[in-house]
Image 1: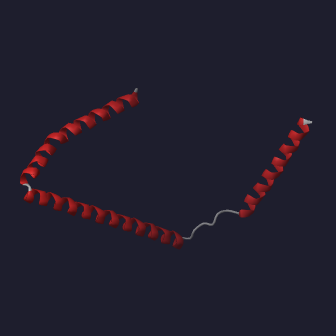
Image 2: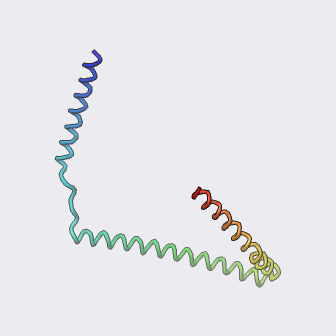
Image 3: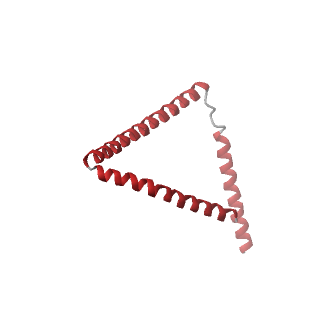
Amino acid sequence: MTKSKQDKREQELITKLQKDWQQLDELGPPPIPTAQQMQEQLHLAKSAKRKAFQKELSMFVITAIILLTAFTTAMFQAPLLFVIIQVSALVVAPIIFYILQKNKAKQEGSILS
């Protein structure tokens, strides 16, 4: 009995798959865009890319102006604080760079192993 049930399920599955394949065949090939449609899509993509670039550039400029204003204010209002920040940056930056390079080399070595 189980064999006949299994055969019946397989037959139903095959029938369903054939019906699905027939529906796919009826859909036909996807439409091929014309040259004008491709040009329009390309123009829209370039426009979106240009807008994204302008947005990123404006955010960069605004951030740069804010940072320059903050450091200029710090330099004129508290020159000692400005000097301390500059000296600490000169001392700490190479140390951080060395640590990052060491970690990077260690990770590359573990990948090769």
